[in-house]
Image (cartoon, rainbow, N blue to C red; front, side, top):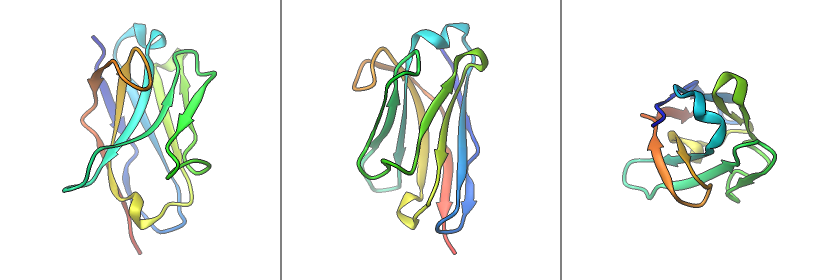
Length: 119
């Protein structure tokens, strides 16, 4: 079982940037696919991005493609989401998720970190 803790959220202006991090407690982090998801109150959960265990393949939702590159550093047990060109509609709570795949078989969620984009 892996425990996940997100950080890096906060307030940004439209067009600004934030970098989210997700630290995993287990040394076995490197065997898991990792996912970013987000949700705002009253809205459906949205799958944002996924990255396979070796970091060689990444996939993105159309809404963030080209803006939110995802990467991982297995030596540091850390997943990243570099958020650029932020928009007000990016105001959601962001979660990192571990799984056996990026489309399903999810087994652990972090507590989330809030991102607010406003002028």
